[in-house]
Image 1: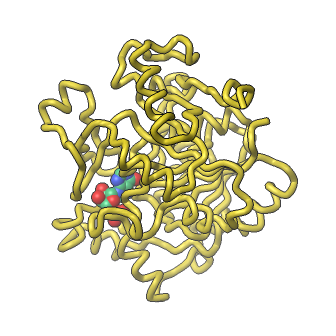
Image 2: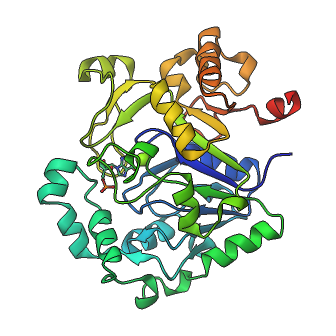
Length: 341
Ligand code: IMP
Ligand code: MG
């Protein structure tokens, strides 16, 4: 049996491809709801299905499964303009439920985030999330319950999520950012404005630790980082471009820095998230011959060895492998692994 409540977490510095993994799981497992935790619209998730591309900053990545709800938990910061625009653009209004206790990102937060220390030293996304969380801690900011524009989306998310789980329905909890951008466990001060590990993401949506069946940590087949802060064995721009690892940020349009897969960092991410399963994305970028492959046995020997080395070193199974941008360009080994155990 595929376990029911899963939380999907980034294992490095964000941009691991969580959006793709969540969009695959939402369709494949017919989940009842995808619920977003995490910081807010500093995230950028890309979902691609049958050639159509969706760029999401607020709405959960489970959009492709039309019978599922899309929820945002009270821990998440909401920029009402971004939420409404995405809902309209992708015609998702009827599926969205947002908690009235979500704190609101206002224009002043965005202005603050685009100047001074935050911009020049930290290299934030400039989306207002740090200043909005700061106001939240000072208990001076607004919550969604106090504004008009999003009132039609409001619902008690902790209640909805716990009810679905208690009814035996499958719920997917979507994390944002990555383990080493965590305010607590990341590379201080080059981090985001709250913890983003599994426990925090569950807390964001109102789920206690006993409600989670599976913690999936997502690693890209190489490491990227956007903004300031350390990155081990960083490649020069030229080498990164030659490898095809030079990416551009979804939210900021900034070039991402790149480095090879970091096993020590991955080990620590497994520990910090109590991860039970691994998803590896963009295997086709490192091993172009595996592009579009959907069966493990059809991967090249080098690609298989790369995956198996990770499993041996980290001690938990690699259950999902991304081999292309499309949601269904995925090797799903869950049944095979379950049958072995
Ligand atoms: P902030 O979260 O906008 O305050 O930015 C703090 C740091 O986290 C900066 O280095 C950002 O580039 C990084 N960051 C925040 N969100 C994401 C994300 O979703 N993907 C990648 N990097 C992110
Ligand atoms: Mg991103």
